[in-house]
Length: 429
Image (cartoon, rainbow, N blue to C red; front, top):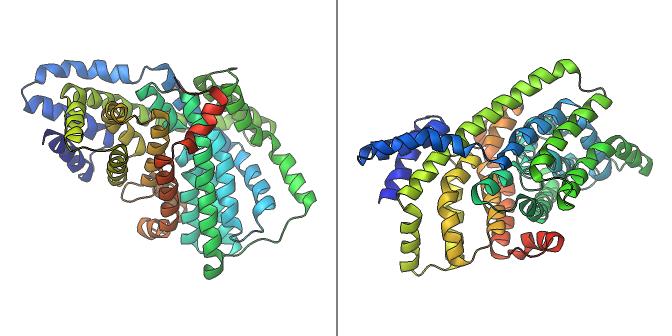
């Protein structure tokens, strides 16, 4: 009952449009005071500070900066040009190009919103110019952007690793195959709808044109190779990789002359605002997580699940249902920070691999990015597409089903995600 009351108060505040960070922290404060434990509020500043000082979390601002630099420095345009020449002629045309270019860009930024807001504008304009209805185009852009945090590098994986102490490089590798599966599932959905909806496609580009656009995009395409190659070979850590990504994006922007010195202050300021917003949520959520442990909520849930005779499959279905519901109301990072202190205590009870669980959780919060009323990718795309949130959300439904199928497959066949990290790094101890 206490658990239901806590999350009931949290959801009520969110429905009243109280900012996420304030809602999370205030819920813990209310219950401490309501139970006569106000003296424990002295832990609030300490836990907030502790929650944002992990070395792993340093990767977040630099991956955010890398994504913003790529969007400003002309890198996204080169990637889109190459993918259009390569796959623009298959069924679904520029829609397929949008998915493939998002898969490539996801190997650089690690952020769904960065993909949607930057590359997404290029994709949307190209599809509309090719004859796509704006709503269909916007739905493809929003859905394709969710591949960003699954294919490495990934900001959610960094956050998950910081909370659970799971290896971030192993998480990065685990996301590669599920991320590609997401992209392929979306491409199949677009291909199936291409005929009935009359989606246009480009004329097949000549081999010389493909080679020309590949040369233009070669150095941007090397970004994921450098990042993942450096991490897996031990040349640098995942945190250091974020700095490499930001420096590499800036270097390419200056070399291509698409990025000017005068562009740096606004890019840095936007990145700073995005980082501060996320870090404030992380800080308050760390206090909330400590509060749930103090109240022994994970222990009570474990006892309840044990008494009910829950199985690993049953627990996974419960997790899927909970995260899908929370995804309608909460930002994905907030979901991680609220639920993981509980789930990470229960997973060992059912012998669930924490690396695969991180992939499944990330896939689930990507679905949340496409579900109103708080779908972050929906808002990012609607800001320039101007098609309305609810029509856009409805149009995303086929791609939501595709992502959900991939999620369920990864949840119950963990070898899909674990094969690559086990191959590259050996089985986890």
